[in-house]
Image (cartoon, rainbow, N blue to C red; front, side):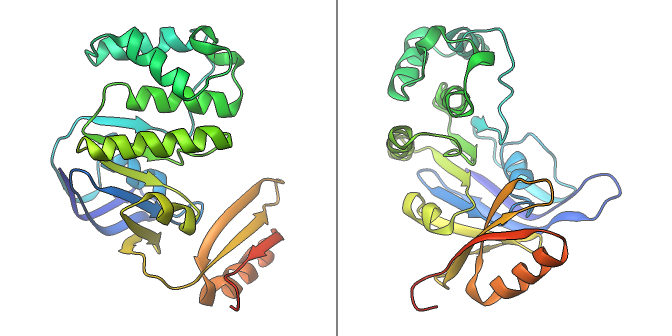
Length: 250
């Protein structure tokens, strides 16, 4: 379906963000990409979704793509249904109103199809963003932090929707910072670290909850044997440690 070979990416004359990334996505495969904030997950997904060209290497295969960005631009006067209708017509989705309404109903959008995008909470805007990615039933779903902001009920529905996509032969690639969460939903998990991608083994992971100097909470999943170094680096940069979760006995 899609193959990345030796892919690298840099922006302008800056340092490499990705280097020598190799990944093959087959029909019916669900791939989870884990990594710390700033590791390049969003950049990788934009390349997989054909929204960004690599600076090196090749991307082969041209499946139809449904893409969920890491930030959904919801500041619009359009209603949820109006927005999905517009995108559906561009993608030649038949019975677009019916399909859109069904997705919004399953995801339990607050305010229903007539809710205006600019009035939605982050979690409800995420539901509309998911609906637009799923709407055309693409051959490849590329989802950047798809569970972000969703309520528990929507978590369950999203898992069902991904399983249905897999069953009809679609490929799925999603980014997620929680290793254990990615393993629960993916057929294969890869870790993005030091600008490259490698298959994630079963080595124990620590989940670090940090607060940056601006006050924002950042969650990062790292191998246990690297957690001390990551914490030291964070403290040296003026960050604070909120919580550290490690596997029992580690």
